[in-house]
Length: 134
Length: 249
View 1 (tube, one colour):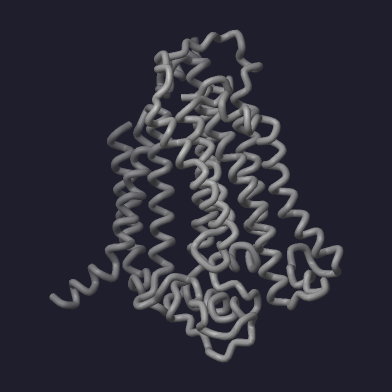
View 2 (view 1 turned 45 degrees about the horizontal axis):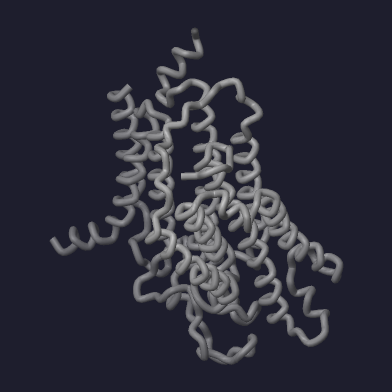
């Protein structure tokens, strides 16, 4: 039983990200409304961001900022910094840029949807296809 | 459409679930992701760059190229939205405006915005300038700066904000930010090093090599903040007024 609980605890973070990812994927495929598709895409993106952040976590580690006064000024360090005391900064960096780029691409998508709505008077996919055939 | 989508999602879910069993335990400190390049970043960053915030030093120094093209992506997205939302293309189609007539003014919202905006902007400048030593940096500060303009535009209307920050200055600032970033890279080349290797600034008098990295990063972060601020506000302005830039929400 203990082993089973340990197994759940060591994996549930990934599973939660997986659930969010599937919600986003299902929405992107099945929804007819373009705006709902975009919302699903954002959920999908958040799932990936959460997954990356869970990868960076380490037990008993602090934020990736080295404490002040931990060693001397400007590089003449005497104390060895142990990598196990700080979470992995690399996924944080990647996701920081991914969030901002995500907002920018979301803006592009929304502007295209606005234009589609101005031309076709609808953002339902099947109605757009019908009005294009006519 | 619903059932095939559900089945596809389910099969992807099962596959990923099986794959997740092979992932390292959550919080394990010697997982593959944390055992190759990141220990170098953590252990050597302070020595090499004199920047305690590892996220900033990795973002702006070790992976400087990545961030440069990241803000070029943001810049391109902003330009794309400006181009798509211009009225000239589809001016024949009259878009019936579903916006309700706006109330004259909301005194509580406007006073609160007037109080908040200066505080937000000062805080944003702090986040940009202090990003080396505490959580923060160019992207975060730029977004807060952009949000302060958006708040002003929500409380009043777009025209009021455009009196201080018009479309030309948005375009100008978004270009200036990218140019600051690329210019710092080119300045390194003029000082005899590779593009974006800030160690070149150590040739200037009174700067050690580690400090040169730190100052180079600060300049780069300022460039990022300027571009992000201009693009965030321009996205809001274009999307909320469907390209007219008259009233906004």
